[in-house]
Length: 188
Image 1: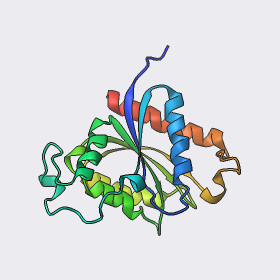
Image 2: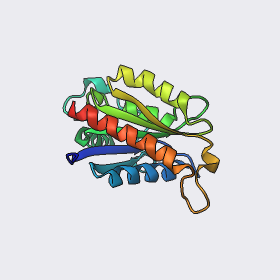
Image 3: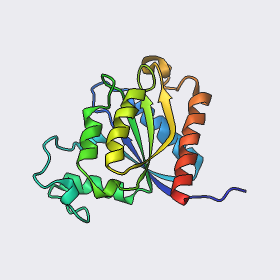
Image 4: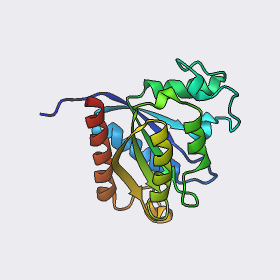
């Protein structure tokens, strides 16, 4: 029998767009993690967190112990620090990641180091370019990005009129692979 793991998983909804599909995707993934039974989930919606696009004068890399000047940055840092792993739920905009995701990454520094991270992308083709752009920044920030990912294609038709994800067996398997990979990373 498999041992029960209780990992703190931070799921970050990256889209701040009006009429976004990301909320449905994030809710679906949160359900996958909760139903798995090994995770305590903290969902952060960057639209609600509302980080400033004007960064403080002090570079995040110069900040120690999450003692940021801005309260929102300290709140954001606490979510990241408290998590054993992070999953970003992100669309693809113009073959890249949304500005909101890049901004959220740029607000912190030491909190990202060696943090296991997964990626759930959605868009026309499952957001491969968004993940690639994310990977460049994640490497610099020393995030420990797993190779398993979820890529939901044709997002405009991915959920039926009742809000149920089409081809759920396929995407549920991808989600389980991401979750298993994160548990393996954290348990080392």
